[in-house]
Length: 403
Image (cartoon, rainbow, N blue to C red):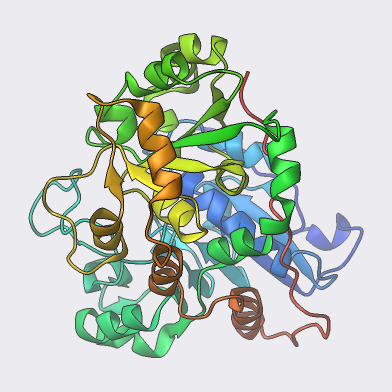
C-alpha cells in the first residue's frame, strides 16, 4: 500500500524546506471534534511564539469519527498523516482524549474535553461492561504497560487531584490543577454579549431561548425531538428567538446532512442552529433562558448565569454531589404538558441566584488563572522560557448559525 508523506518542517530534509527555523515542534492530536475544539483554546498560548511550530494530526487509522478530517483541515494548520507522526519525535503533544496518546513520541499534555475530568454519570450509557471507567483519572485511562502515558495532566479542580490520589497515585506527580480555560473564556467574553446577540439577529426587545443537548437517547435532542417545533410554534416570533446547541457527537454519528434534514422545518421557522465546531459558548452568553440536560454545555451555561430549565435528565446513575447533581436539584423541570412561555418567564423570574457561583466553584478551582497556568505548564514541557508578555485570553468569536 502506498503511503503519502507531507513535506513539512520536520523530518529528513526539513532544513532545506523551512523558511523560518524553529526550536520546538508542538503536535496537536485531534481524534474527534470535541477534543479539537478544546485544544484550539490552548493553541493561542503557544503558537504565536517565533520559537514554536505547530502541526496537527488525526490519531489512528482503523476507526474515525465522521467530520474530524474536515474540522482539522478547516483550521488551516499543517496536517501530518498518522503514519508520518509515528516516525518522528515531537517536543510537546497536546491531547484532550486518551485515544492513541501512548503511540506518540513526545511529552504529552492531557486536558479534559468536557466540564472537568469526572463524568456526570456513574457509568456511561455507551460502556460495554461494568469495568469501563467512570472518569478519566483511573489507572486504565492513564497508564499503558505499567507506565503513566501523559507527562502532565491538566486538572480543573483540587477534588480531581484528590480523586487521582485514590484512583491512580502513580500519576500524582504529573498532575497540576490549572482551572478551566473554557469557562474562563466565557466569563472574560461576557462584555461581548451585545455583539453576540446582534450576530444572531436577536433584537433588544427579544429573548433568546437556547436549547442545549448532549448526545445519547436520554438527551434533549434524543428524548424531546418535538421540543424545537413546539417552541417555535408557541412562542411569539416577534418576542422570542430560539437557538439549538447540539453535542458534536450528534453531528459525527448521524451526519451533518441528516441533522440539518431533521431540523429543516425548524430552521425554516427561524431556528438558529449552532454549528458543532464553534459558537455554542457565545450563544450561551447571548441567551436569556436555557433549556438543557445533564451535558457539559448546559452546566457551562448555568455557570455563567443563564436561567436554566431541564428538558430531560437521567432518572438514575448521576454522580451524587457532582455539578450535574447540583443542576438537577436546583433547576426546574420543563413540563411539556404545560404552557411553555409561562415556564420560560418563570425560569427568569424565580430562580436560584446562588447557582452560577456554586456551579462555577465546582467547575474550576482557579477561576481566571487557567491561561497563565496552562501556558507555564506547556513551556515547562517544551523546555523554553515563558514569554514575558502575559497569556492571551482571546474573546470568543462571533457565532455564525447554520442556514
